[in-house]
Image (cartoon, rainbow, N blue to C red; front, side, top):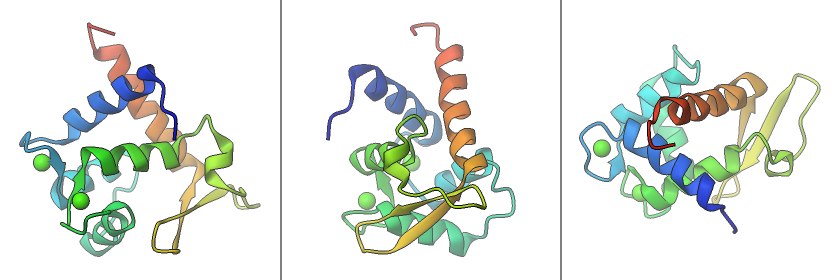
Length: 126
Ligand SMILES: [Ca+2]
Ligand SMILES: [Ca+2]
């Protein structure tokens, strides 16, 4: 997997923004905030745990930096191939490491991109 330096910097900013306690992992509370920012305001704790499970490669219940990069890469809007087929309802399906699938709406994908773009715009070092 190739990730450009520019993308890595973007993901680092996003990760730091949501790792509120700065322990190097996105836990379920922090992840829920991320999902709410993506527009999933009514997401349940159970749904949050399911999503974390999709990307939690070492099964410690939190999203580490490496796991976060994988997640962002799989959600990347600019690389449509990462989403597989977009169906007629305007949803994209992403396969996870367990062979399961999670479906994202285009709105969610776009919200992710907007969050990241917003962070870049706010960062004086960008
Ligand atoms: Ca944390
Ligand atoms: Ca983990």
